[in-house]
Image (cartoon, rainbow, N blue to C red):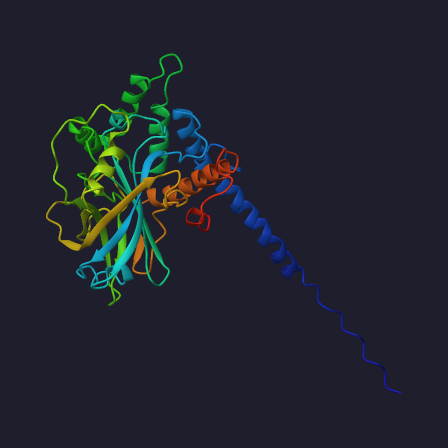
Length: 363
């Protein structure tokens, strides 16, 4: 009788088990790094937003920056001139895209007087018919003070009020600016900047660079700005603490307000990773269309209340550049958004929202 063949031993798949175990371990390490658990001194979204709270206190239910604002709504009418540079539907010839926006002033105090800062902001959400969105946050200054999230955090620290005086320590602020020469362009602008009497007469810059991709696949580094079509009255800012919302309401009672969206195309070598450096004024520009603002509403009940104006929410045809401020803004906005929306559940009068104000997908 022939011998029975000796059963073969199954190989030990030790390598496979090691790999399987390594995947969740790597994920845990990644989450630890992102959360700052493994590097307590590393800048995280939480630390950045905590610093906003340290500077101005905690105001439940409000954004941690640009806390004081007003909702607006309208539409964007494309001129078609940007369509060769970006395949985004919002730029298609004749396209009319609904917009929900927000005007605000910087800072974490929702009760700050409108004259307390010379900067105004415009945030917009364009909702295309294909369901994709373009969200952008712009400011009424041509350059940002610093180029990196770490430098911005250090600036907030330097501007934290001294408990003894209730104001920032001038020595700490001076030391910060001395250590950051890249702030020179912003400081030069700030020396002559004055609080305006209206949101409607301001220009608003994207500050960060982005990348357009055209129908031909060509990529174009861009920045944009909103140019007002309302006349500047050149008058001094009123003394009323809330004059900006009052002025906006009065202007809209006479008809819509308009801005031209002007897109600037970079030349090769223009910096796309440094918001402190303006591009030369001779760069080509494109009149992409007109923003039309038709109505306003208080931010606590208006359509902008539950929108996170994350500047990295972009449609096909628009992408972030290599500017390090963009991912930092996205992460900090998300942290702020989660804080204020979780707080709303515990505030009087917010248990039930009108249907039109129900929050969109959290992000």
